[in-house]
Image 1 (cartoon, helix red, strand yellow):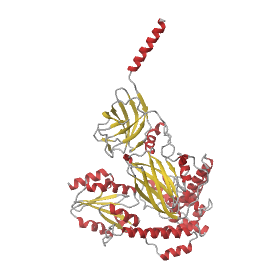
Image 2 (spheres, rainbow, N blue to C red):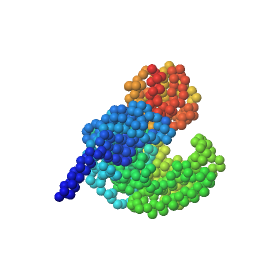
Image 3 (cartoon, helix red, strand yellow):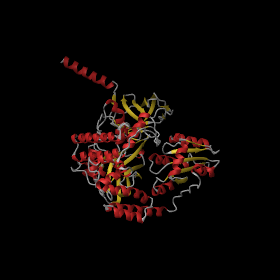
Image 4 (spheres, rainbow, N blue to C red):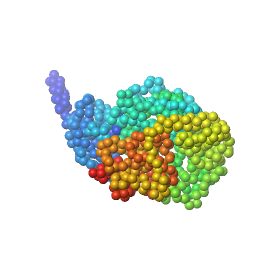
Length: 636
């Protein structure tokens, strides 16, 4: 009896002691739901009775700064927990990243209750401040199936072979449903569409905050490969691939938790603890089986030649040795695909992509060896000639035709469609293939692509169209060119009077720049070299435009925009009404001279003209903050 009483008393005392002991909860590398940044990651959460401590792993460009606002807070179950202190960083001060581009510091908050399963980290409420949502405290290692996807799209994709390309024209409609979206994650989404006849086209759509959807509509000529992309700040972004059929209407469900997965995966890879994620995309539409099968079977295995690494080819190879090298790589990768555990559709998909890449390897044989030479010598002047380079000959190109049927239209259904089309239309390879096969798919494609460039600018003549129609074997191409020309002319008519393109001064190329800026002497002039197809250019334009009404509103600033004729006229005229300034669209010779004059290494590029008329290239203005502060200083 006394023993029992003693035991009971002991257990009671132990329970009291335990209840008074500090409660500590530690979560290492927690799963993150969504994030608007790739710069900061919470690598450790430690919760005690007295505080919540977040260990922050920051990664950013060396010698650039980041900042943590003093009014940062944690949000859990609708309650804010303000930041109480920091260690390793000073709130509201510029923190300069070291040479490594990596840093670690701690943020201190009030303790979270024991029943909290997740929280949001909000680095102040400003639009560009760091935000990490649904930071998990339960220790989950996998993301569950997202809510909001129709049950039919959750089922495994139907078995089958790689679909055939659809050769027709039509108006395509795509609705993107952003699952787990928050308004802080962006207000618009982009789609890059690799087309059969007119290169890569880019489209931007606003996100409806009520439905978290964005809609795209465009004319499509033949099959296309699309990539949806959402910028999530700090230079990062998330995206996914879809296949598009002309005239189709499709719904794409995109899981925004990809942003949280990407943030964690880039951090924990060093400790071999990448979380499972599953699918980013669930798609309906004509090519849904291909899109969904690709998503379901995506992995880190890449069955490709990696042509642009700089090490694919040795510049010392002669053309015959290079040809043998490509054939050897093709056969080895074919064996790898055959031996893989992929489904029949994905085996055929990767084999088709490999064939596309092999065609590109033959067509770009001279360039790829030159690229290797540039890597070896660290000389990035593309005008250089490689000493002793033995260039590809028709007999080398002919060797490609012995590997597989290069004239098969189904080759369009791989991931390397753009490179494949360029290889057969921009090099001597297309002529060799045509001589081998006669009229057919490759012949029609090589003839149609340059005409599509004319149709895209409304310059295709009836005589050119008739001549092509008489020589082609597939009616689709002529129908596509005719439809493209008609759409261009109709759009240009609708844009009449809305887009003002300045007349290029009628002077020699040597005097062109001075003639453009001459009327604005005494003012600060920012000359922006850009083109419609340049995504960084568009991002910079979007960032600048609202500032013309606020920080950079000044009669002393003149904005001049120079593009060239690679910007399709319809796209160009559609964009410039929303870009306030003076617009010039110049020819190839003029563009080449100005690029050489200022040593422009890419776009966007900026030339700053001071009030006294002196000017210089300012590509440090690619740092948008520096551009803004400099223009403000010059006009104050």
